[in-house]
Image 1 (cartoon, rainbow, N blue to C red):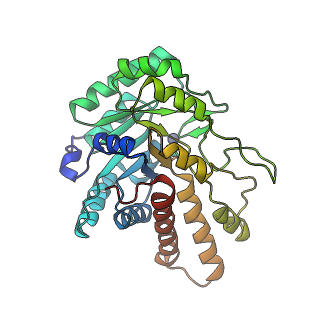
Image 2: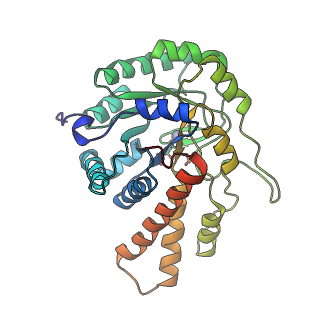
Length: 326
Ligand code: G3H
Ligand code: 13P
Ligand code: ZN
């Protein structure tokens, strides 16, 4: 496709300054996934309201769903919408789980300010080679790059892993030095989706492997770390979904206490997708069940959007600590 111009002209920023401030300040920048207008509106409104820096992120699947060109102008619109309120919060547009050099390049050329190249399922040297190639292209355009070491269980877009492999702390120094990445996603016990842990009715999910995180911190002090699979799978939403005709048995996420502990460390980006999906689905189900005569999408999508604002406000203020940091 034709080159459309890079992120600076859309009013976006890369993640460099955001991350350095977050690591120093002991909080994490939220990275919320979106696929449609209402999700993006909710993310921007809530982050403007709470004066939080924000990363809006798009998976490969979301990019095909929403359309590449549409996304570019949605991102530009999101920045304008924030500025019209007088807010100067930094906004980055990030590719989540990029799986090839070509995809990262296309996203950079259409206005993304940050990309993830996820070579975590590759052999170590192949991960380094692919990540290095993306970094060279991205840095030429002032775009920041997230790499990954260690594999999360669950579905990462089209990459599916049955078992997780924790990040090996002894590899991180070499990986960061040889690739030139700006941030590193690690695997310490989280997984993607709404079914993160198998636990009995009165059991607590196992704690995250903070010992691995702290060992990584020791080896690359102050280097920005990213936590994927960080939804709490808010029980109230799961209950609402089940109450209004859904079927989500045994959905469990990461506790807010664990996320607060991670945000206080060198984890400076926390990825949240599933909680947003649950909020939207719960509110649409509830709205339609309570208003069976209604067929105006603005009504049920509006209810979902309002709930998403409340969820993001809560996360920024009470979990990630990013509120007031913009
Ligand atoms: O890490 C995966 C994200 O939650 C994106 O999911 O590929 O279904 O858009 P998706
Ligand atoms: P959740 O499925 O826990 O929201 O994780 C999202 C994620 O890591 C996106 O990259
Ligand atoms: Zn992820």
